[in-house]
Image 1 (cartoon, helix red, strand yellow):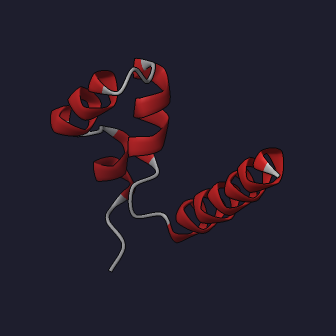
Image 2 (spheres, helix red, strand yellow):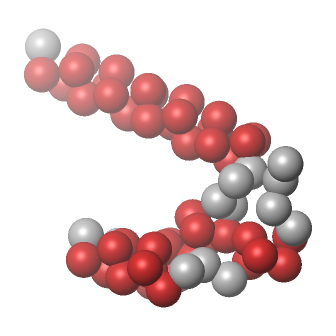
Length: 61
């Protein structure tokens, strides 16, 4: 069952702290955390990661 929209808008402090530990901008972490539980976002993210990995493999060859 999807979360209500209001609960997806405010990212948990733990998520923001984890992102700042990795050097990600606060605004970027808020956008990513706001999409938590959105299947369309997760699909797009997965596809984007596959594309990046293909380009990374191609650059090594």
